[in-house]
Length: 266
Image (cartoon, rainbow, N blue to C red; front, side):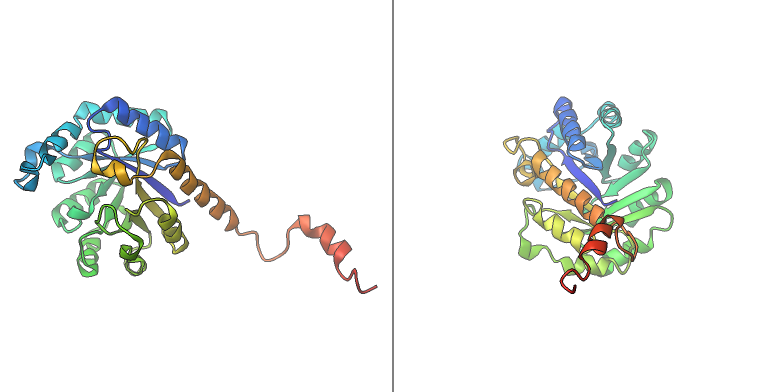
């Protein structure tokens, strides 16, 4: 079964009731995971975000331990798996303490071998994006993963990106170093994700929103509930078509086989 991650991220802007609505919609429209981001602004290094307003947004969207507990419970109640990206070992430890068995390493930490090794040794499943890294760098990171079940995501860290920037040949190349490869897709709509599935992607990540008018950059190019449903319905239909029914013919073809064979050769 191809998995679909609804990347809620920090589109909730710190409103946990809104985040719960995201979870409910993601589940209703077929996503496998409702994904968030786990960080602490107390560990945020100095950068441009200190002067352009992003630091205040990060603070507002930061999830407390209690917030994580609320969202995990909401996911359980809505039959969807909770997932979160981590940016440091303390972030990963927080998820471990909450009983999480799966974690995502975002593109920007895909060369952080210390974090990768920690997650590999402590989580059953590791999803890692590969944006901002060369194939060689990602290959070195993959070698560090010896224990966890790895899903490797092709990613171009441009928000949003266009079709000409997708570089799907790199996704195909990643399949030579990992047997479960997918796409973290930042192209608007779901057509690009469908193309990636056709090229062998076994997991798709799309930024997800319930209202494009909500504040924040990611809400503007995220897919809406009806687009998520379109994607998950496509995947279900595709998987039905690939059911292996053997090399014979369907028994429902019997009437045609018996009555129509040679009908104009009487």
